[in-house]
Image (tube, rainbow, N blue to C red):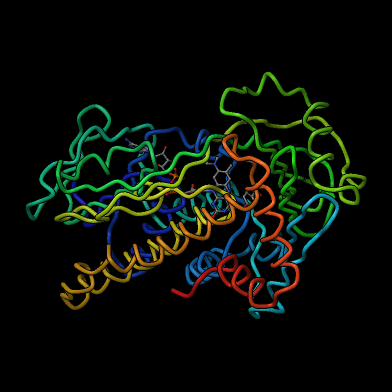
Amino acid sequence: MKTQVGIVGAGPAGLLLAHLLKAEGIDTVVVERQTQARVLERIRAGVLERTTTDLLRRLDIVTRLDAEGMQHGGFALADGDRLIRIDVAGLTGKHVTVYGQTEVTRDLIEAAAARDVPILWESPVLAIEGIDGDRPVIVHGDHQRLECDFVAGCDGFHGAARAALPDGVRKIFERAYPFGWLGMLADVPPCDHELIYASHDRGFALASMRSPTRSRYYVQVGLDESVEDWSDDRFWDELCLRIGDDAGKRVVRGPALEKSIAPLRSFVSEPMQHGRLFLAGDAAHIVPPTGAKGLNLASSDVAYLSDALIGWYKSGDQAALAGYGAKALARVWKAERFSWYLTKLMHRFPEDGAFERRMQVAELDYIATSDAMRTAIAENYVGLPL
Ligand code: RFL
Ligand code: PHB
């Protein structure tokens, strides 16, 4: 089999890239390890920057996004019973959109079928060969070979593409955090019309949502804990303690539709390209979810990469392709910084004592009283310009 751009992974990065290239007449094949059903049941991100919604608009895949996505002009940082509102719209003139990653993925997969964007399901990529030459090959499934001009590695943190960069080329920057997030989804109305990120003495909590009738909540847990340790009742009790009295009283309880634990990690692999292989999204970098940046970084990578590939095919532009990684990494590192900063500010670290806790409270005090601090947080949260 042959194509122009072979794409590994049918997550948001791979699917968006496939559509952006297809819209310019460039052929792609997406090769995905999982079944379509498995990809569609993964519950992950919930907050979309303009970077992401603008790409979906450019592709005209916005019918459901416009009908069901919720525009948010702010969020709150909670510290005990104090709520510090970050007026994102007032400070930046921009909004974020609350719309689940699951829905983005569903919309992209449905549009792929309608627009003849081929996706090979249940076909794990085993190797990527010849990235130093002109005709790299993706070896997948039952040792089938997909010959391409370029390979885009959009296969997430546990994928195969990053490992195809030669030894000695890759440099890893990493921080694993000593805790995870236990997430729970329930068909109950959210406790607030905006998101609340809570820094409590007992640990972090987040009140988020998917729709006016579906809530998504998280609590910080130890790495030694498992979902079985957390009955629904225990989860609701802990959440209500951590998010502050007012919001806690408004929490509507209900049975969990899903519960899972995600460890938190900061990770960057440089460079993001070698020869004819280009990495995008979680394949190249991971952020802790505190800043809501993971999916949005996948989108900005793909915006840069699609522009560079389109330039190469339309006008033989080599420079844009050669500069892709550096351009993407400049934005990635700023999102890494913001995600790390909010994670440090809002979580309890087992090694920290009373002094570090006072530092967090002092910083939250400063944020509460300084327009400059709130502006810095708002412009990072809403997404730095491309
Ligand atoms: P994905 O979504 O992991 O997709 C990669 C795809 O590649 C496939 N794959 C392979 N296919 C073929 N052969 C192989 N050898 C393969 N190996 C893997 C996988 O099956 C998969 O389908 O990566 P992508 O596209 O880069 O997208 C990244 C985002 O999914 C991720 O950054 C976000 O979910 C992170 N994230 C959030 N991001 C936000 O922007 N806003 C948020 O509010 C937000 N909240 C979150 C999050 C991530 C979370 N978890 C569970 C890690 C909340 C949580 C709890
Ligand atoms: C979510 O709704 O899943 C969500 C929202 C904001 C975050 C992380 C996750 O920062």
